[in-house]
Length: 326
Image (cartoon, rainbow, N blue to C red; front, side, top):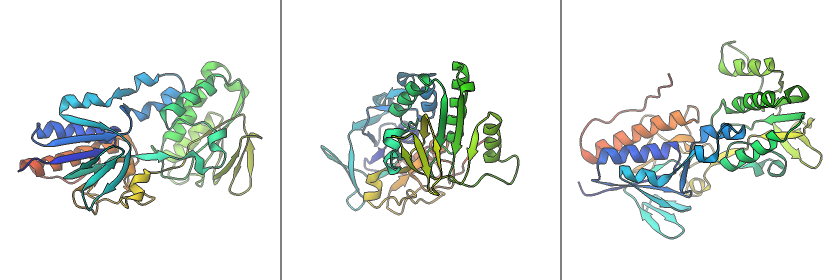
């Protein structure tokens, strides 16, 4: 087989896993290129630890060029366009051709979609934002904290409660929890059904910590001048510190290229192939019936790397995706 080029877009958990796994399997006989706008990988599950000062940015970032030891070529640059008809990816300074393309661009946060959120709210869904949130929490001396979550999709479904519990624990350690009232607002109905279900357990556990919960409470506006958050029904809550998980959506380049819809990239659930020839997608950018979490992206990356290695080397048997969560 002639030499082929596999291009991976995105240096998150899924993209790095796919690129390194595939490069190791191909042993230099084909090219694997990883493209990202940042020179470093961020281990995003640890952002909540940044928020409480248990980690520093240097603890959860690694230089992407470290993947080159496994045979991956790293290119840094903003991705301006993807053209499946010509099999090219357009960057600011060059156009990269591909034989196979793996989309691993995750989801982007858009706090500006909630009026006032950029000026009046903190969150921990990006590295820099988590550092700013830590500064706010360590200087907080008591009052009312409101923790809000948006409609899905967003990264890691249990993370809003993890953030809530982390804030509660951090304030206890600082000795200011007894002077603090915490409210949790969510757009969905109060979880019911099986008492052992995760959502119900998380809700009851939050309330056992003294958190006041508000369901069917979709945040519509954050009035940072008056420290008030309002919902779509016209109700409002006063806050001294507002923590609002921002709305998420696929990368704009995926939407502009027609590769993604607002719900994400459509893929075959067995192979993670898109409707375009030789284009695969994984991780949070995919419209897939599973949690948007690193463990899912990693397993999807392994499946794509395995099947592409079989196709490119002619050795082995292709597999279908089977998610393992235990």
